[in-house]
Image (cartoon, rainbow, N blue to C red; front, top):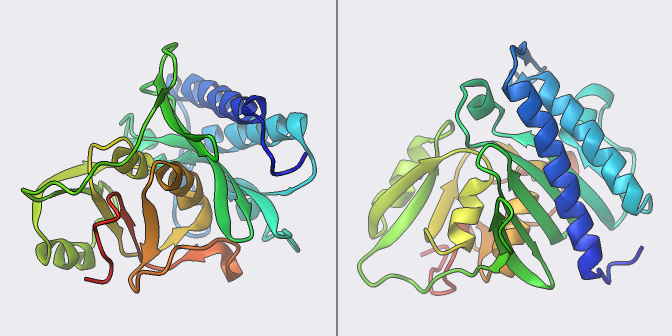
Length: 262
């Protein structure tokens, strides 16, 4: 497999994300146990089962590139080497939302090449909605509907709509938004925040606090191929394959008219 993806290759990754979503929903509708990982974050059997499905599904397509998955890192440690091209997987992004029976959790699968996300799939199984982005463009589909193209919107003249994290809002985010013309805020969980920008429902999403690369890569890809970007506080595009796979503070933006810093 090369990076010259065919549409069928992208469709396969979308199918893998949906299969993982089915596994998650089977647990969601059962009595499940919540455990705590070393970093104090919650984890359930849905996380580990979904990652197994994703790893096996990617293996059906290719074994050429390393897979960096949140749960495999938690249980087996960091990979010794990823190479320039590798997969980033968060099998259940928004576990807090999942545990609290809110529908704002996602399956995230991304392919990274030379520090940039070149393919990303975000699947929200509880609402049966999938977003994906690649060089073929960015699209979304709900249920069995035909996928439709999505793109970011122009900067609204009457003020921006900001997306904020439901579970991880910080004073830094409040200060950032207070300094800008924000007319509305949407609070939600998981990588759906990137997708709201990508499908022209919002304009900016600041995140100040610890995140990992698997939290952002798939949503970043969707937003990137919808015409948006994700940058650090100095306006430099967020990159991947960093030591420890930890992100700095970042801002996801829709319209190119939005400048960071500024």
